[in-house]
Length: 400
Image 1 (cartoon, rainbow, N blue to C red):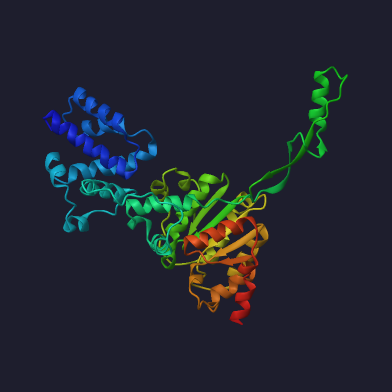
Image 2: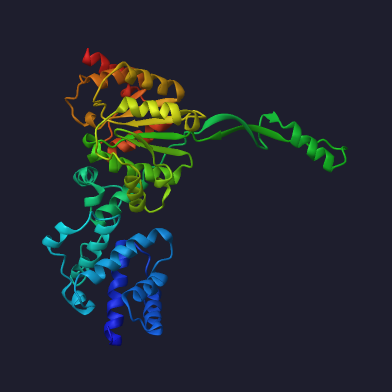
């Protein structure tokens, strides 16, 4: 690291890896980083870390990716020159002793290995679009976000970002100023008249305000739902960016509010915070207890103004009692629509034979699958208008 050429080469490679991992690093940042390191006369690894951090990190949510990249940058070999020359992945034996990767760790690891492909002709470079083949979609839909490559994460982000909610605004009791409104606003009309000394009556009009109804999601994160819960949480994260009033709750054996955690702009950081906030991830299933806790503690807070509730669970309750139907009926009466999203509907031979499913079906408004991007698109369209094809009564008739 004493030679200027090696120093510039190493920082350039590190900046290229950061850019591949998702940080907006450009040539100007590379030049500033090289100048800062030379001017600061770096002597320790910590000084080098914070010098580069001050240049490359411009937002708080980027710190996690930078930290993972820097640790990998120094861990590969004792000397940075050898690390860049060899660019070899971590040995399998070392991976077994490491801790569980943090948010964005896979993207960072891939970013260090990707320069091998930079020397090849880039004839097959392309941009991901929302219109992909069926096989590509199925691959992205079933794969865990922690196991996705950087390219797959970018493709999934664009596909989910393309899901636009319909104009499902509802009329509220409040009024808003509208020059073309059908009602006279007495208060604003009097104010206008006073400005002119009362000689002229300038009528102001108003109309009932319209706003998007709140969306409340109750997500089952038990062991049987682990394959789909992370994908749905990513969908909720994208939904939170487009809607102001989105409330998210996770449950397995207990209920946890993760609304604040999913407000983080970076999806990896948001999912990592949501995972660390719960203590029963991939545990057992206690749907009745979770619904009871929601109805008692959160129902009046978040189910105002005609909220839509998305219940994401397979309905495989551990102990089916009368309280399950009671709590679900109470939830249905408290919201405008209760939509049950069940990944078990992906099977064409699905039948409502489980005791928990039979107890829940009479108390939901819609019963939908949620196993693919196609089902997400149908859900987005259904938020604006109810669909008769998702009527839960037909499943009750088939079960009988």
